[in-house]
Image 1 (cartoon, helix red, strand yellow):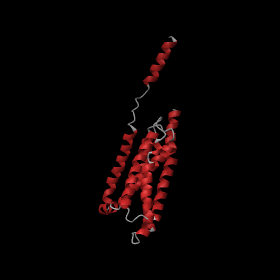
Image 2: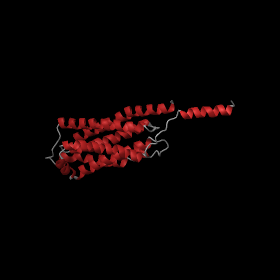
Image 3: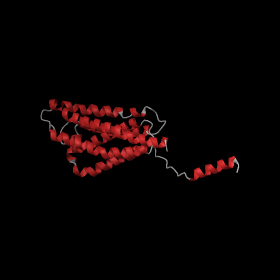
Image 4: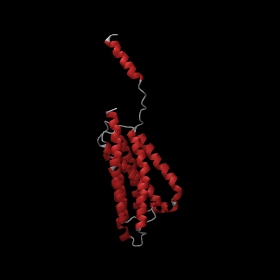
Amino acid sequence: MSESLRLDSLVDDLAGDLTPVRRLAPPALRALGWFAAVLGLAVVLSPLADLHAVRERLGVPDLCVAAIGAVSTALCAALAAFQTSVPGRSRLWPLLPLPPLALWIGASSLGCLRAWIAPDTNLADAAEMRGCLYFLLGVSLPLSVLLVLMLRRACPMRPNLTAALAGLATAGAAAALLVPFHPHDATASDLAMHALAVAVIIALNGLAGGRLLDRGMSRVRHP
């Protein structure tokens, strides 16, 4: 058998063992798919919420703007995470969630003045603040796992950055889901507890999620 025929036979043998690879959906569509899961969780939790109180709270301008900022941050950070998971995309995508993040932080920071502006405000006690922390961390866990699993199907070249963006998306979603269960007005101490929860969520996603995404890349590099 000639060398060319042996080469053709080898190519045929290798090609015969290949399995079709399903093409990934566009990053925007995958981000919307994850956000649909967030909305599904909101529907599941809705029977436990005081919807009348939610409508009253969203009537307060800074609280409404903060909620919009949290939702926008979640969606933009998720889109940025999916974009950075695809090789060759612009390095500017990680900047996408910064404007809504600034809106979220700025509107939420007005709560620091609540005790001074409104002395009769309903302040949170230690137990309520711990409840907020547990809610944020508990809700973020399944959303983080889902998002990282979805991101693992791609090949992020900067897994820690992608995972950190996933953490920001999860933190924004968890903060938005907290609104119907937040029985007190925001104060400096309450916001500090929220900031701690957000920092923990992003850090854990960046570390644990980054390792999981990097392992996926390792399998691609060394099959």
